[in-house]
Amino acid sequence: MSFLERKWWKEAIGYQIYLRSFYDSNGDGIGDINGIIEKLDYLKDLGVDLLWICPFYKSPMDDNGYDVSDFYDISPDYGTMDDAKRLISEAKKRGIRIIADLVMNQTSDEHEWFMESRKSVDNPYRDYYIWQKGKIVDGKEVEPTNWASFFGGSCWQKDEITGEYYMKIFSKKMPDLNWANPNVRKSMFDMAKFWLDLGIDGFRVDAVAHIARSKTFEDSTMESNDKYKPDWRKFSNLPELHDYLKEFNQAVLKDYDVMTVGEVGGGALPMEAIDYAGLNRDELNMVFNFDHNWCNNVWNLRDPNEKVVTNLPHLKDMFEKWQTNLYGKAWNPIYWLNHDQPRVMSQYGNVEKRVLSGSMLATALYFMWGTPFIYQGEEIGMTNYPFKTIEDFNDVSVKNSYHLVCVEGNEDKDRYIGFTAHRSRDNARTPVQWKNAPYGGFSNVVPWFHVNPNYPTINVEDEMKDPNSLWHYYKKVLNLRKHSSYKDTFVYGTYKQVLRDDEEIYGYVRKNKDTILVITNFFDITKTVSVDGFSVEEVLLSNYESEDVNLESLTLRPYESLVLKVKTQ
Image (cartoon, rainbow, N blue to C red; front, side):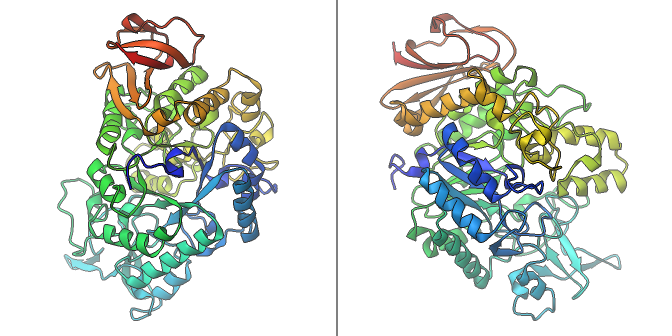
């Protein structure tokens, strides 16, 4: 396949739905499939034609659906299989495709495979999971290795039935599948075919970077003061997983016109992304990375009340890294956040100047090359939630961490809550604020999780009524990218940064049949810059009232953004 070969998924506008928090249609306080159906016209109007829906499978909800107990059934929280079929049908009527979260790394401990696996060491399903005996150190039994879990503590959990340990790199209720077992692979491939035959258009492949493991199960020698070593390379991006993905492609994907986007997380390199999604790799179509999600000081705050400040040079480096190293070699998704990151308005924007900073952020990102994915509520500038106590959080990883560092450890509880409030995944999981009504119009009863108290001033209904709102600006962005005569430039054109060393301004040129210059001021300042080598032909989009644009001496107001058709001088 050629890099410039037209594919529907290259030209699509994606939108991620965290189902539990999207819209409650039946008054039980939980978002559901019929709630998505009710909002399909809203999504179509915004400009979306591709939905990524987080897991809707049957699950005990230890991690809100990423702990699957039955891949072939729908969680009663979300509806029925008939509801799922109707969603697919109604979406297709509107030209909207759907990709589902494919949870490949783990199941729930309540899945029938695991319940069989733990019965005895010689159970036929024992090898569906990763079991190891403990080791004796100084006369005491300890875990098989000193590897850490992403959710805190050890990545091993002892099971008292057989006295052995199973691997779980996330929650203890999410045992890891053993992809080295061909029976596991076949079972997962059959499940994927089931959903594709039902009519979905592909998968976002969850935690795909972790499906292969170090075969030696030896302790990490990483230098760290932690009891359990966060040596993620013991089970991340290992060579064997590419064999599994090639097999998946050959056994399943090649027979369908679908798209796949894998989650490879933080720390992945562009060369590794090319291994997953290179043009002739026959594995996945693209991969998400997290490098651009934390380009600020949230992990280095000295005080919880310290202001969060964007490190724009670092953010520009991350954009450069992925935009230039993948272009021509592998496709790229572009997104500000997903369900695992804080709200972008609170990360890189200015809550007090939501429309200006939010429109700037939309301009900065969504005219780069790659398939856009908007996260629910981003289009109205939803913000982080004001967490105050540990009881305010829902995230199992936060609760595990709190117990380890505050209950068993000595960290100050209030400081822990203050820091975690900036960083928690729960910020993205509060219900969508649909209108200025009780519970933000998400439900007519108390929702499963907190509604942000700012819903009276930040909600979809008011945004849609105001022609100068952030929502309407997002609609302009998506329309310019998708439906203008410059579509091919935005989708397939080259990318090159300008003003590379500037610490406040982010700018780049997209070039194909036309040349487009995008300039954004990331801060609440006024700054004058000079962009050499171009002259302006037309202002395509601006978040201020249009004025004459002189690139030789361009004064950018706070959070100003411009999309310009230019010509080379």
